[in-house]
Image 1 (tube, helix red, strand yellow):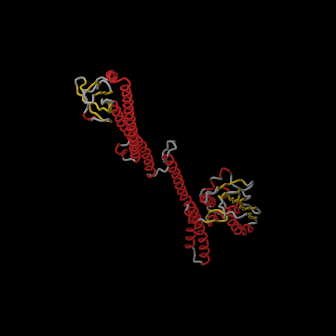
Image 2: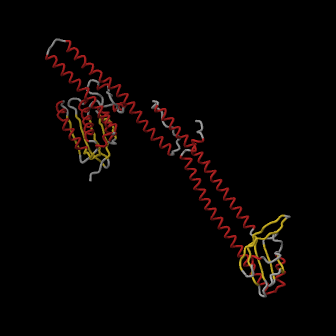
Image 3: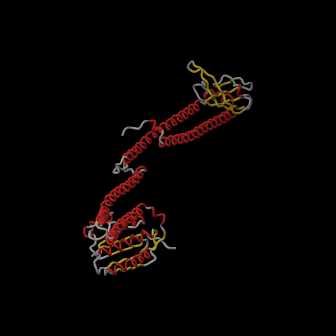
Length: 463
């Protein structure tokens, strides 16, 4: 994929976020180095003053113990040119005239009393004028002699320059790294967004097989891609189901509608006969009922699959729903010479849609009675254990082979051994849709002989 233009990268939220972090980090570094800078200068100044105080005390002791001559010798040994050494010394008489030291005269800024003073001394080094900033202290010795001891602050200035340069380069480096990181982050972010956008464009053009690419890194884009791909799988499944429904609906409705049209035309072409017209209308009504039954079943499946019925969910006792369904179908079972039994232990309360649950149970019982032989037994049971409510419908009919149990849950699917029975092939597809709506697990098992359908609902605690 070609690289994105720079102006697009700079407008991405990732670049702006990285730049913001770089500014915040640079500000933090600035504050930190500022604290370090002032701490270092404070330490250097404290050491300078401590050294000057210690040296003055030592020189004062030498003067007191060994006199002025010894003090002059010591100062002569320690003195040199101001530019050559960091130490500054001056011993003056009571009239402030120079006795010894590397200063030629008493500085006017030093005054005539003791205390701390900052001096600016001008010297010549290698033929060039130089300025030295000196931190000094003056002290009056017994006899009125004046002593000045100072330290050149050149090392302090050099250290200050080093810290300032480090501060500048650190800030420049921080901002440069922030900009580079923001550029790289935005390019990667924009590449992933472009991949998602390209996949979305292909999907909008009608290619529902496309999926959002993922790089298996587990990051937020992979999680987003996973969620989008699951949604696309569902959409593709629904679209495929819709096409299948359309094809199957046209195929299943063509026959009754064709029969209806043909029967009406044949009746109209025949002689006028009220009895024949009545018979034709009765047959037409039966065909229309079959078509309406198919449409109603499809509407129920669509309602369950769309999830719009969730707003109407309440607490439902599945045992009560099963008991009502068993009572409704018991006369039909007796008419066919079959035995329908119900066993339920309540309460078995779930969060559900009562009408759809009742319709699903009715479909299961209708199928079980339809495919069970005369004298067969159908058992409906409801029980709960812990966190799950189980609803089971078992019969001793021909059953469903393991290879067909997934397929029979689709719409308009009818196995070969059920072609002779009336129906649209939507019964189990409605049960599957209702199970999905309620978050229940649907299993088709071998009842040896026959089929056992098990619905496992998450149980709702009853206060």
